[in-house]
Image (spheres, one colour):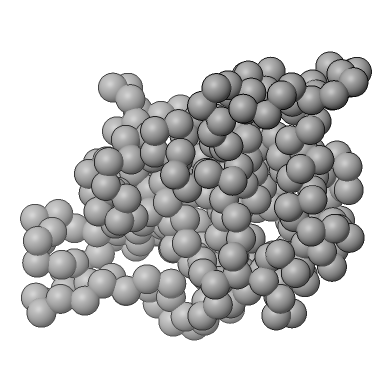
Length: 297
């Protein structure tokens, strides 16, 4: 077993609070964390959140003042794992780092100016703003459950589709990444409706929240997340969850996302997205279609 995250410093390590939950059967190496010099005023703790069905370990690292938040995170992980099993199993450990505030999260995620972020997921590490700081009263357990299910879906997708050396090169588009996470966490109630998406797509601006997702992401994150959620849901409803698993499996064998999509679904992703756009603009979700789509602006 290898740990997913290590801190290095020239200063001597501080004592750590280690919470063992009895879920790490068969793991030989103890968890260790070194506290950077800039953070020596506050001790760090490590908690084993769970062992996944595939044997990989998920841990939570946190500062002492976030011990209660870390307990919320640990429970959220335990609740998420059964719901993630539909897509596959983790091959490598995942470490969840609980950051004390939003600024620390932005620095760790390298996403300056993203005020809406609460977490950022990678292959084997999730940066998380402490739920203690989400609101004046902190986050509820259901809110933490939902967000961790979303973020763990990202990490699982990367691990099922690739390995730690290749996951960033699979060319997985934002609509699929965010759509899969939102769909799994059942966050459709959070995003703009299909009608909202139809109005945005038909607006004079001509902006496309799928094709221009990376450009629109910061200023129009709601509509980008909404388009991603609805596109992925459209994919599942038309081709089923086995097609999604097929895409992930095909990528694990070498092909990038576009080729894997063709292999699993039977048509290029651009053709699928044209069908989705027609479905939205023609308002197929209302049970009927217009004779022709709105004029292109």
